[in-house]
Length: 479
Image (tube, rainbow, N blue to C red; front, side):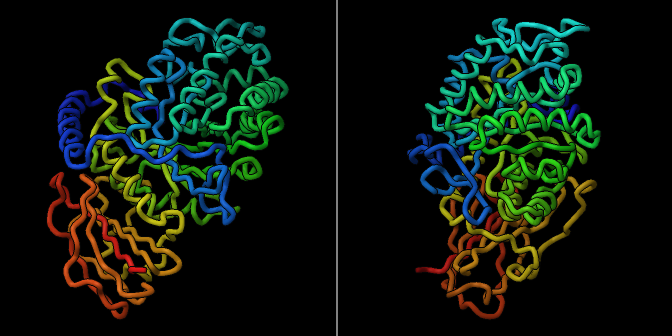
């Protein structure tokens, strides 16, 4: 997250009001959906990249849709019992990924935790190098067994609940100076330690960086890369990625990381379709996903936007229809575990994220190809905007995707208006439905099946259940 995303007191009056609305919305939506946990079987870890290099699959080759929360401060602020409760809650809401947990917590995001200790005082290292006795002078060659045993238990708890854990080995917003003080050899050694220790856990992946803009300094970049290479030397199986450059960034922006990363994360506070489509088209080809965007209940980003359910929906559906194969959701209270976090788990944003996952899992999501040449939706697209100046809440751009077979078309319309579809892009006469992303309901479009020739106009059926204007059009050819 960017620095201004860490201002816990920002916009409190607005946050308090919106929290009341989100909690009420969550209750109403669950009344329509049913509150029972998902019953789908847990994935068989580890995950790997699919044969066509567009998405992840589990050990059995089953497509794995990344549906992640971002509990970054978990090892610092939670007991094991609290972590168990958190993972159980996330599993019940359909999350299959924790993306990410900081292995070490100190510095900018954790200014009071000067020794990077757990809530009960376990330090991550047992010695210091010359020059100081704060976290920036820890000796990376001297890990504390008790601390990493705690992390072992956290990973095991996540596995119990079918959750893949992205671990950030030494997040750069707080620990870059520690790497500088230790040097390349110690950074590599620390990476080897982590690789050797965690290669036996099937439910992990690695995410390096965190607002890492200093990669443009070759010496800083080399230090962070040394940790990643140390991990890979001991554990070449588990996938890695990296987060660069707020407010926009791609894991492939730095050519020196292209032989390390396996999936390409998009970081953006502007319209997500612009950044995700950029990632999708980058080479070498690898799965794209939305790594970080606006977090619920935070006023962040450039351009700024408060993390309302409406903003989050735009980001979520735009991303999936622009080539992403999953994403990390974020919440002010559950990235930082700020006081009161237990009362902010089951928000409207979480409920609609569950709806998002259920919707895409009902489709061949892994085969969706973004309609970037506008050969499917040919009218009513709205304004494309600019990644650095267009606010998410102000964008009305329609994104669309279809399967190569022409059997499925999906289009997200953020504001109520008519769109025009090239029906010849479908392989047969389709039936049409409007999907309400705020409560998970469908409205069948009269007149179907429609001829798969010429063009057809489609208009949303009024305000959705949240009194907003966004809907998702689905056109499906019967088998």
